Amino acid sequence: MTYTADARFTKGSLMWHVSAMSFTTSIALMAIYAVDLLDLLFISRLGYEQMAAAGYAGALMFFGSAFNIGLSVAAGALVSRELGAGNVDAARDYATSVAVRAVFVGIVLPLAVLPNLTFLLGLVGATGGSLALAKTYMWIILPATAFSGLSMTAVAVIRAHGDGRTAMYPTLAGAGVNAVMDPVLIFALGLGLEGAAWATVLARLATMLWALYPAIWRYNAFSWPRLRVLKRDFNQSARIAVPAILAAVATPIGTAIITREMAKYGTGAVAGMTVINRMTPVVFAVVLALSGAIGPIIGQNFGARRPDRVRESFFDGLVFVAVYVVVAAALLFGLRAPIAEVFGATGEAHALIYLYCGPLALAMFFNGAIYVANAAFNNLGHPAYSTLVDLGRNTLGTWPLAVLGGAYFGPEGVLIGQAAGGALFAACATWLALHVIRGPATGIIKRPHFRFYDRRMMALCHRCNR
Image: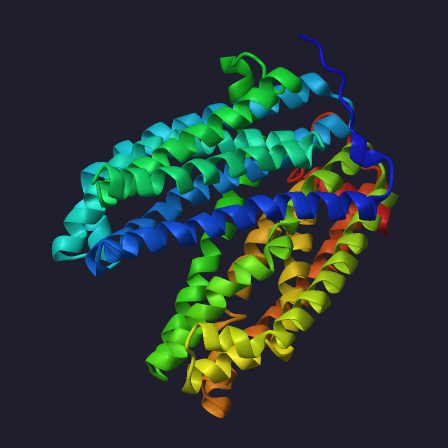
């Protein structure tokens, strides 16, 4: 099968590309969050013990997902660059190398985790009946990690080819299978929590098949695995995947810090924060999708040696974030009363919801700026910067300012402090991204091989910049 690369992001309106990729990617994210919420609703009918078991298992399984997220980021960055440069064979080799590593992680991770489930679940607080239920739940889901890894890699590769619409269908298919099979397996067949686990496995399988079909048959995106190529590509994929994995782990760290600070002010404050945390991914799914959406656009233009379009993509991404956040914040402001009423919010919960649905929602712009900057870091050869920004934003940019804000303004001050930290790190990330973006203009980085961390190359870049 022959396929001629169409680096579609190297031509046409960049704002159109940013908007189209962001919206198509966000639709898939919204489907995931909606089905997760529906899944939790079904499990809640089984009792609090089952809900707790699913929560414990989810907290542990996130770290497995972090590996798949990192590998998918590597696949998208490497493939989009090679396609932008017209190196179709190299793009196929990179896609294959990352896919093989995703399968390897999907096999090794369950083998390492399953024998130690009692200890690991105990670390996140599982005990008694919840511990036993969580173990059963994970024994069913964890062996399907390879399905998830392959599907995420294939979706990233499709997106790197510039086909955002096709890339969203596998996730929608998986969400649909999960939504349909949950009530059938949980209630109709009487499998309870095990039924929810099997529904997740079927959803992962459907997502993988739906992603691999267009990747293989429409784009011929993979080559036959060769040991020599796998060894050759290991360093390149690891340099992007490892920082991306660490960056993915940073988010729950920040959430845990804010939860701990909110807990000081009682259950009302925690309840209000919980509503905000569940509402944010739905309202701002477009912003959350930006890093994965704009990455292929930057990558293709970098590969095509178009530094002007790389810079324009970055600034268009920031403009897009600003416009979307203003519109979404205005919508939240208009709906703040019914939102608080639907969730039965009173006291501190009511005050926090009103604060967030007022001016504080505008602070989501700073998160969006960080996502756009991370896309630039990952696709321009500096993935470690995204790790530093995300870890810094969720530790130094969260804890001190949240504590300080809470000391002066109570639970509202915790959210204000968190937003202030986001603004600070967004400014740093934007400055650093602009510094990185100047790199392609020097013409120093040669094709087709990238030696991002070669000291001699960096020294040459500095001399040229002077």
